[in-house]
Structure formats: structure tokens, C-alpha cells
Length: 477
Image 1 (spheres, rainbow, N blue to C red):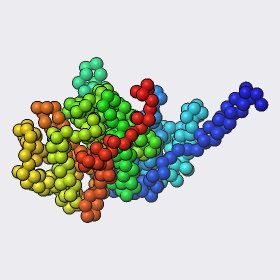
Image 2 (tube, one colour; image 1 turned 45 degrees about the horizontal axis):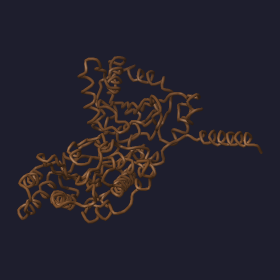
Image 3 (spheres, rainbow, N blue to C red; image 1 turned 90 degrees about the vertical axis):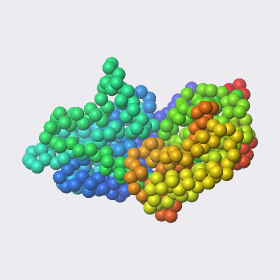
Image 4 (spheres, helix red, strand yellow; image 1 turned 90 degrees about the horizontal axis):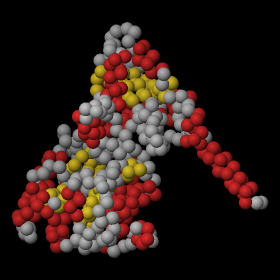
């Protein structure tokens, strides 16, 4: 067989196998229909019999990015179809999905996407009662207004979370856009709510946000296992960056080492841009440029985690660029390491985060009294950590700064958050921290990422191992 015939045969085989692969609709396998139905049932119970809930999914991507569903619609359906809408009817207790129709041109290039034509399959996968074309949504809403009393319409009044987004950061960005006199455009969520008000003024609009936020705060066993895996990948990625560290490398090379572990481990992408900061770059809490060389004597901070099947983590470690903690670095890092252990030992259900902070701070005051600091500024920095109440930092889940609040009452089993003791030395532009993510259990706290080394000797031993960056030829660095 000549080379041209071989090429044509290979192309035919690739085309055939590619087409066959595209015939399978993609749908997540992490959450069965029963769990999704239970979530929607809780929403229906919360809104009551004389109300409906309407959730808007994410739009399709522009360009060559990978589509990711909004956290809110995915949480209730597991569906990754763009421009999807979920309607929950409090009167009937039924759920309805409204989807675009099949786009054959797009499917020829990208593969199958679940659409309105796949109603029977979608009902089986998601447990919803009805699947209709997107054009039917407007008609369905009018039907609720044919006779009084009209139902209250619940929808999200907070912005939907997408790829590498948290609500707090979205709100900051929207505030900046509104302040720009040449922009000022509303968010997609805001535009959706305005359209509902304009087209259906009879509806009283209520905020669905607090209901979903409260549900998402307490994680189910399946969610916890996804977060455990995301945390394992985060820790393993940072450990690979620690192995790869050597003076003269660039921050982004450590970023690449961690990201490689994420992707090889099955993550789709990163959950947030990495903080890979050497020296005083670490003083910026959300540093992102990652373009500085690692210098002898620097401490390196990495804070990084993957987006693993719509769930994430938040893990941070610090280590010396040259492989050995200096005496001053041991002093500062050692203080935060001790605080980290005191916090972990006190997390349990039935107590408030304020009580945990107070107990840990009281224990650290005793340590403070018998500790001699090499500099007065270090003593003041350590003392300031005892009054800081952010060491149990924030919920973690589908977003790195997840929704909900665990500060309003005693901790409950299933609550996932980050343990993040930190200290600042402003005179030397130093920021020291350790961060792990875990879940409150029936009798304590299960740290997902605690296996990543925190002890000074263990970190230095890990740095003596070769990392993935060292496997690359020097000319490629």
C-alpha cells in the first residue's frame, strides 16, 4: 500500500471513530437523578405552594473556550447545555426544563449536546418531569397569570457563578463596570430579572439566592468526595511545585508544574488563577502575574486548586526558594504552623467559629508569653494574629469563595471551609500563611489536603526530590 493510500485509510479511520464518539451525549455521572430531585424538592418546599422558581443557565461560549454551566443550574440538574432554564412549580411540585433545539452544524464540529429533542433521555438522567423547547418558556409563564392569585416568582437576584468565579469577585467586577460611564451595562442576571419584570409585571419577584445558598453550604456525601479529590489534586500539584523549585526559575514554571498535576488527575481546568508568589510578591493577597524569578533567600507562597467536576478546594503552602528555611523564616513560619495546629484541634460540630477562634487564640497567648522573637516587629505581628478573626476563612464548594455562611450559628456536619491562619509583617512586606480545606464531621474535622507537608523538615526533604520541571531540557526553560 502506498503512502497516499495509508494516509487516506488513516483519515477514514479517524473520521469514523470520531463520528462514533460524537454519537454519545455527554452527561455527568457524579449525581444520580434521585439526589437532583431531592435538591429540587427542597427548593419547592422552601418557596411554598403559591410560588414558582425560575433558574437561568449559562450562555454558550464565544470563541474557543470550553462551556461550563452555571453553578446554580448544574446544582439542580447536572445538565451542561447552554441557554437552559429550569422552572419549578410550587403548585404541582413538578420541574420543567426549557432547552434550545438541536444545532446540527455545531454537533458536526463538537459532538452531541443534550437538547430539547432529547426529552426522554433528559427526564431519565435528571429526574425532571418535562423537557420543552426554549420558546415555550414565555407561554408557560403567561399561563400562571390567567387567574389570580398569581404565584410569586423566585429567581436568582445575585449573579450566577461560572468558570473560575466567586460571587464576591463578580460583584466587585460589576461595580467597576457600573462606575465606568462608557460601560455601565447590567449583568446577565440583572438583564434577565429586568426582562421578567418588563414582560410579566403581575409577578411579585422574590430572591431565590438565600434558599440555594443555604442548601449549598451543607455538602452531601457525593459532594464531599468530589471536594476530597479536588483537594488531593491541589495538594499534589503544590507538592510537585515544591519538588520543582530551584533558584532562578520563574514563578510561572511552578504554576505549570501544579497545573500539569491537575489536568493529568482529571481536572478540567483551574478553579482560580494561581497565586505563585516569591518574596514580597506574596504580600499581595491575590497576586497573579507569576513572572518573577525565584531568588536565594525568598519564601514562596503557592495558593492553587483545580476545578474538578464543578467542585474545588483552596490549598496554600510556603517554602524557601533555596531549599532551607532561614532562622527568621523558621521563626515566623513556625508561629503560623503552631496556630494552624491549634485551630485544627478545636474544629467540631456544635460550636461557633468565634468560639474556635477564641479557644485557639487563648492557647496561642500562652505560647506567645514564652516565645522570644528576634525582632520587635515580629513580636507585634505575632500578637496581631491573636486578635484576627479570619483564620477560618470562607466556605469552599462549587466556588472557591463559596456561597452561604457558617458564622451565623454552630457548625454543622457537612460544612466545608478553609483553615487559613495568616500573619503580616508590613515593615518587611512579609505575609505568612498555611491553608487547607476540610469538612466538619460528626465528631471533629476531616482535612482533605492535610497530607501535604507543613513541618519544616518535611518540606525541606520534599525539596530535595526532583520535580517535573527538572525533567525538561535546560534549553526549554
